[in-house]
Amino acid sequence: ETRAEAALAKNLFLLAVTISDDVADEDGDAALVADLVALLHGGTPRQAPTANHRATLDHVAELLAEAHALCSAGPSHATIAPFLDFDLRQVWNNFSHAVLVNATPAATNLQESLTYGGHNMMMLVFADIDLCFSPAVDPSELGRMREAFLHAQVIARVGNWVTTWRREIPKGDYTSGMFAGLMGENPASVARWLADPAAATQAIESSGMEGSLLEQWSTH
Image (cartoon, rainbow, N blue to C red; front, side, top):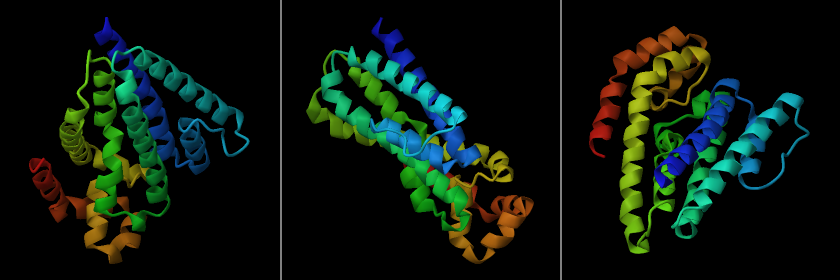
């Protein structure tokens, strides 16, 4: 029974994150992302939302409320809830960072992409949910567990980058670490690559960035 509830909570959080991710990466809607961040923190939207924005906010709020309600029934929820709230905030911080990067691609860099982008994989959030439904959690074990979950999150993020970046750049999504790594090594070429996504794709393919990221992947 608890396995089904945990799985449903994960799917509900995942739906809320997927909606917010599309708003940040593909729509680049900074105002709506700010509203979503405020919503996550229990606040109210910072603007008078349009009907479409209101529908999105209401849908995400409903998904989050139902997911939290499920998790609150877990036997270890009281211990894990502060970590779940913190880790969810990091996911939404990633969306704010994505809006910044896509608005000013020249500012992207690999270190920030690794710091913020990894949270989009939700490994810590999913682990928190599993722990909420665990019969008991020893707080002294949390440090080592969270360190392991972070390693898994980086592995997932790098794997996602090296398999999805080709379809993202033509759509104006520059959040991939593949693009961030290229920018860091060739800042003088940013304007040319932004004007010609095909040239950016070719530059990434010949840069060795994929091999460099996979080398980092292997260290985790």
